[in-house]
Length: 141
Image (cartoon, rainbow, N blue to C red; front, side, top):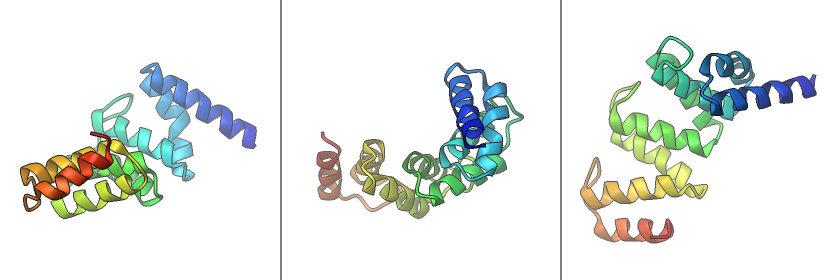
């Protein structure tokens, strides 16, 4: 059984990378439903953009949130963007920052950089050039 799941996961990833999204969804959707955070994240992207499935903001948000809440850093970053941009959910800067911070704590440079830009520009937060500089430095800039 475990080998079948691994094979489905590998097949789903290969299909996703090859942009064969209908096939990717066929393999990854059951794994997402079973709790695989990477599969959830990839399915969320497909639902958000209508890749291989009918576009669904609600399914995209639900899957991204589940994956993020399981501690998957890339999904935390993705959910942060959903909240920041008001995509698939209402715009909510405090929640965006919360999820970017969770991903940044796991070392995700993209989240550190996004937070730094938010603080540098005062985008959804009070402008804080010192905090922005710290975040840029932490991200390696």
